[in-house]
Amino acid sequence: MSDVLSQNEIDNLLSQLNSGEFDPTENDAPDERQIKDYDFARPSKFSKEHLRTLVFIFEHYARLLSTNLPVYLRKNVQVEVMHSEAATYQEFSNSLSNPVLLGVVNFAPLEGNVIMEMATGLGYAMVDRMMGGEGRPLDKSREFTEIELTIIERIMVICINLLVDPWESVQHLEPMLERIETNSQFAQFVTPSEMTSIVTMSIKIGDVEGLMNICIPYAVLEPVIDKVNTKYWYSAAQVKDDSAYREYMEDSLQRAKIPVRAIMGRSAISVNDFIHLQPGDIIKINTRIEDELDVYVGNIKKFSAIPGAHEDSYAVKIKSIYREE
Image 1 (cartoon, rainbow, N blue to C red):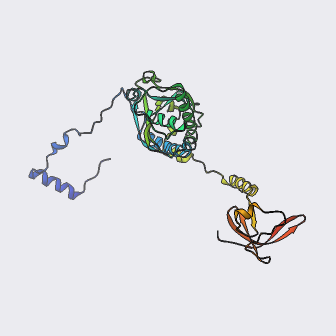
Image 2: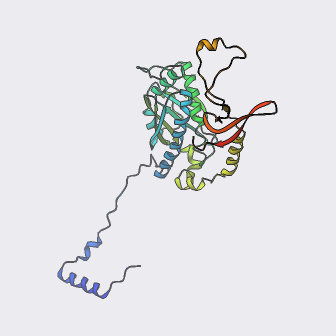
């Protein structure tokens, strides 16, 4: 419904029309609209919301890698998500060099494979570290040996198993490493025109830094693409019942065994006296009979007590508690 003009507005329009200030033919021209080019050969199947959600998922994954990889590599590992972008698989495969480290991951129960590409420098550093070296890459790239690929495969399996928890809000996964390819010519796992999402992560192992790219074809995520958005991600996040976990932890702590020792006193003797100690010898300590003993729980002085006996065993009776560690 068009707006209704008041009498004053009508009078102003008439006066402008008579004076020539207003030309009614100016509004007859068609509206100029901004036209956006659309490439039908490369339809944009991944929206910005999808890419943003993938960044959130892999940020969780990066934290898991930073926590778990140092256990195996015995080196400080820092992982950071750089960005996520949509591109055709042909663009991804053309950027690969030789030799290359490509992990073909079965994203079961989703159909299709996800490609995990790791910088060769990281692969050499991992092998060197696992073999007892300092974790330095090679000065010049070469083909990986069978033994080196076996070592890298073990690390990749660990990395792939960590994908389960970050994807739990979208889909319960049972990922499995199918194989490792080192030649980019054998990297044609999907059609070249297939749209993919490429998540780029920076991995730093000690002083060695490299990139890891995770290429996810749209066909793999198509059954759950509606769940790959932050609104669903947060709404589907269930509030965990921590009561059972709390009870389990309390029960485990109550059954945990910790060393408790009462210090009768301290003394210092020479090595010569120690060597010649005989049964019946007396060692003078720095406490008196009426003094209270310090009782340590672990390495923390927690109680003061007096010595005594219980049935056939030595014992102490707690007199006070030290509140400060």
